[in-house]
Length: 86
Image (cartoon, rainbow, N blue to C red):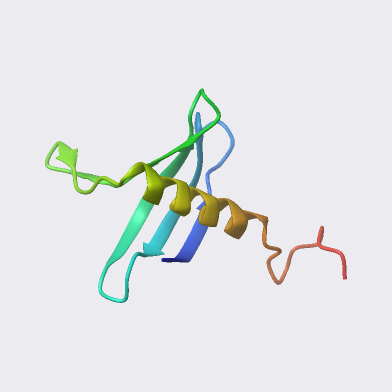
């Protein structure tokens, strides 16, 4: 599994911390997943909805893996990050 893209959510978006695109396997990619902080300190990952229902759900183990990878991606400095030490 690898993060293809990670976009931080703007402040004021509730518990949502990021939107991510993930390559689960070489054959499966999931786009625009929502990573949220849960009240108990854990994380939740939600796929987009279609026709009023969930498109995909994930096991707790995979949620932890996606959330961990997304948080790591958010912490990586970007090429134009002025806060990164050089």
